[in-house]
Amino acid sequence: MMDNPTARIEVQTDAGALATAVAGELLSRIADAQASGAVPAICLTGGSIADAVHAEIGRLGADSGVDWTAVDFWWGDERYVDLDSPDRLSTAARAAFLDPLGVPEARIHEVPTPSPDRTMDEAARAYGEELRAAPQHEFLVAMFGIGPDGHVASLFPGFPQLHEHDEIAVAVTGSPKPPPERISLTFDALNHAAATWFLVSGESKADAVRRALADEGSVEDTPARGLRGTPETTWFLDQAAASQI
Image (tube, rainbow, N blue to C red; front, side):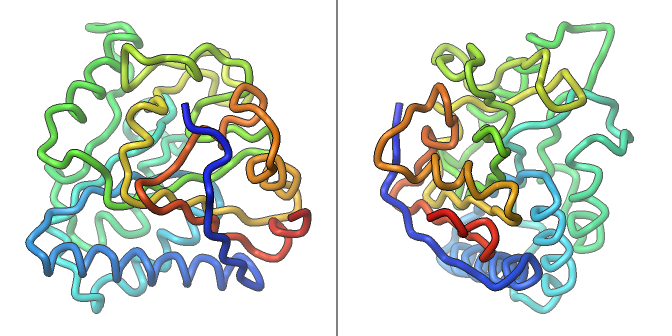
């Protein structure tokens, strides 16, 4: 497992400037990849700064040169709730840019929802199998937030999913953050990204950022240390989130 990756750090003045910078860079990367003939895959995240980024994508996306019918969208993790639940990360992303920009349903790879026909573990396995079968072998960009405890996706400090290598998507129960049931990609899947981007805003995240970038520390205590892009890892921070580095 990768630890303390060499990273590029970009600091913006505030959350608004951060969201605009990330959205603009993402749109440029997608357009460039499509110009080379690729159908890029993007791994989305949730949280307040991700919502702000998604709003900027919705604002800028129609005039960006991106062909929205030729981009695949996945999630690094998702709350194990019904498709129309406001707790679901995809609900906000759909409203902000996926639906307004006309991304086809076939390009939106939803994490399975609760069903009486399969267990949560089976649902996670199905998402992993869908990802394994995808034509793209890595994400063009995978985006992540980080919790004050250092968690990424739904990989929490001390949880057994940190050490999972047999599956690339796993069920998570007893999450320290509600809702308690989630499905998350594992490090083995999340580290298949050309570019790994952390999107972090606010002073409450500053200590977690410091621990993730410190010379010493463990993935067990700060899971964000386990993520790295191939070859790019970038931390997009506002000044508050960067205040301890």
